[in-house]
Length: 372
Ligand code: 13P
Ligand code: SF4
Figure (cartoon, protein in one colour):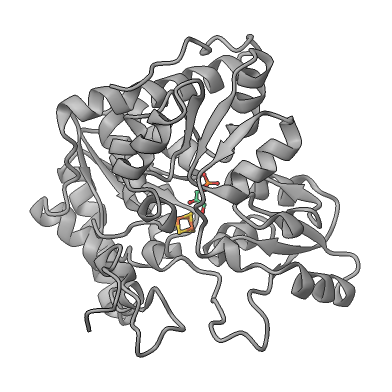
């Protein structure tokens, strides 16, 4: 059909026969749950191969519980995207096995070009990354040369290579606040909800790219208010990729690690959680006496009722990971010159957050880098 728009990406090609699910192609790639004996055999194979290949696992909180547990059991890490980047850079292993989405593997490779970086499925992308193509983004930057370019980690290496600063949801607020205190105006991409939250909190002058996360965008304030009435003592924990009216209801807003910390530290026994439901595994195992309820998505009348789970995170499975370790397939490649430029904003973020931990002033603040 000539009037059908060109798909933005093969995995998010909208099926015009069934427009209700724009990510059905990604869901079709999600591996089936292995049978118990196959699952045990795959785990044994992965444990053995990690040792043989001098490899370490780095997993995000949204991936399958098996990939989280195996990472921890074998001396790897489960964390938010900031800590994944830091851990991968600092670990002595010669191979990093990143379970998450592609930008996480790319960030690991940019920070450790000498290491092999493997992923269970290289096509595991992110709607924020897909929604910010580098050519359009570069044109946006070119049109606003007076602004400091701050991009979220959920972007391609090429977009990072156009940025002055990289941020994740755990440090975005502090970095933008520091830039604002220096009198800088911000060009922000790609997540409009996270950007809007930071703008409201800091009062910074921020020009926004219009991107969003397909998972968090589905949380609805109206449905949440109804759920809160059913659970009046529950505290609401929200990831800042959620819409403004959802964030406005929150008792705590923050990155996946911040959500975990809030759940551990808050007195409450009941929590409603507005983030990807992969998070429930760690929330529940680390807080056995507490009740965690998934925030509702869309409305009962909506044509597409999201399941609050990222299809691209769900593409990570034991079999893909074992195969990557066995064969070296799914090796992340970054053009070396691009990697050198993309590393600058990442290093700034890591220097900023490292200085902050030591209680030092914002040592990472340096002039704008500008176009490569
Ligand atoms: P965190 O950095 O909070 O883990 O977020 C990553 C992400 O993709 C959330 O959707
Ligand atoms: Fe991207 Fe949203 Fe998936 Fe996170 S949950 S990786 S922001 S699509």
